[in-house]
Image (cartoon, rainbow, N blue to C red; front, side, top):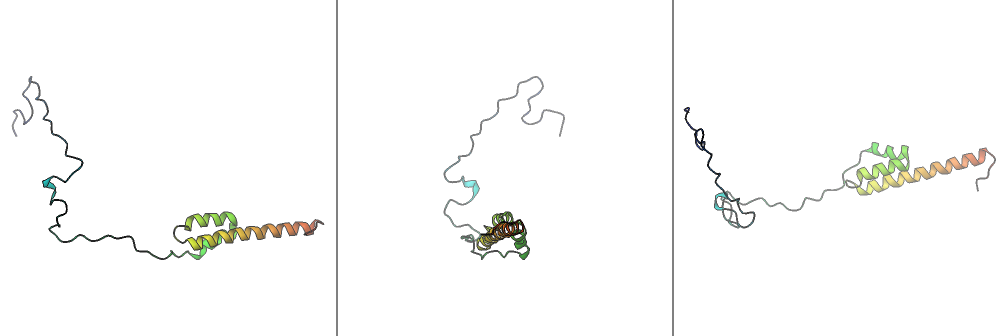
Length: 124
């Protein structure tokens, strides 16, 4: 590489030539020939693998410790467990929600009964 003008570089004091316009490639239609075989032609390296719909898998098993959430936190734990597991195992998610609600109702009834009997009130 010498000290003279480089390619596409004008000598000192001369204006640069205008850039050459190159149109962008078309955004539709068949691909240009430099990109491979025409549309519909089989590829030269064998058939493409067929990708079908994903295989249906059964519901994902829920670890047992997740049941502690609705048991210990009541309806709030049931709602949290439901939203975590509703896509992976919908039946277990509904069951966790129901367990959380039922435990909350049982706790409310026990609290009401204990306060009614201990402070001279009537249960029913």
